[in-house]
Image (cartoon, rainbow, N blue to C red; front, top):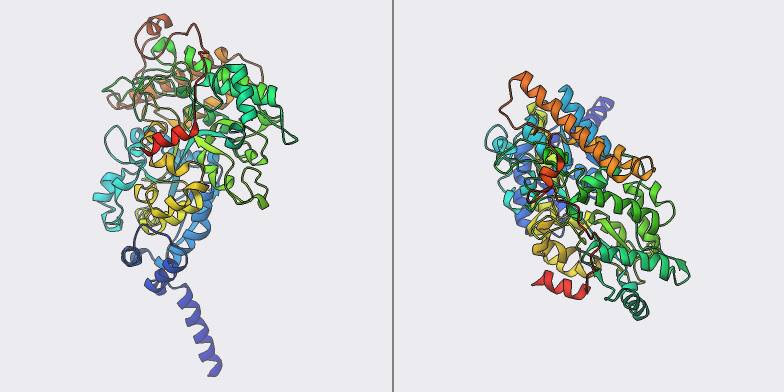
Length: 578
């Protein structure tokens, strides 16, 4: 009898630890006290929000769901810490898998094409907003929150607090994705080197203007040349004036679709994206939702003089001014390489890597001093000669929660609860301190970031500034992101290998983009959905017809290297803080 009682007690104990009914407010209190600080909410407000999650999750407690995101520090924190907290508080177990961005896009594409439920929720870039809003395979969150998902939608979600909600809103005005993390591509530089009087004097003597934050690509190029070919060595270390990457892989395509062409000035004015021509060079007339071409002959800009200039400069700078081996780096290798301390500046640096760049010197980071203060700063991206006021100035990644109709409703509801949990005001300030990828206005303005700002190299000042709206993701002109994105890296890779000139590569890319969109158009016609928002290509004409018209595509400039312009970093910060 004693053995039976002991066995029963053991079973009960096991059940108590596994049965979701034992999840609840005590577990929430523990997490709030020990992990979810600081927060933009008071502890009482945090408990109230967690109580809502506990109650809403009861029908799904005991369920095990699978979600997928790319590998960055923010998502690692969610996978290792927040998924565990969510399970202990709600009783829903989450397997939060991390893969490379290319694999995430592939999984999204496979689920869309097959209708098989590979994952119950995805954090995939808002760059797919044009895809999701057109194909209608994802769940329209606006209608979901008001209808079928209303019972699992947090009343304290506060959609208007998300700084990137315009990025995840389709041409229909509906929200299709919920931002989970955001990071911009900004300019990065070694302020300690730029402040050296001897280097400032040498630079001005050679170029005729002050060494400072470059405003245009001409200045960036001059600074790259100066450090690589004139300075060459600082404190016994061989230094370089530029860093980038060129490995023939999907990362290389995103390197360009992430607004590189628009930084050069390829597109039209308009925020969050150029209209009618966006940064991919895809034309979509104002008032229309139908893409009409990527090639100049159809009114697009993918092979325009500005686009070709952008690709030429990327290739030229990588060859001439970057450290040996950079051309073989991918996205994940090139950015942390800055911590070696041998690069003066990087024109295309993602703020997602701020967390790595503020690690202590003891962990091999040579870009902080002995007190952990950064020797570097971030600043606005310089722009190319084709750029005009009113255009976007760079890219902002907005990894966003996406639900698919192919996911069973109960699993979709459980995933939606987790998505809201990891973006909730209860946890967002702490998550942002870990990953430094802001999504909420309330988090950016939290006092804890005012205190930490001096150690983050300008990140907080940038996100609090009005300038941040000039950095935006891919927009609604792109009708099928997975199909079109895969064309870029192969064509750009042929430039880096020397197989094609920039003009040849962009001509081929533009033609291939038009071919993909033409197939989409024919599919619409065959399916009888011709009156939707799919591509409707313009007939090709002599490219000069479009180049002679106002706006993009823009004709070739007689001088693509105007005089360099710089601004003192201190003046920039004053402007941001006004």
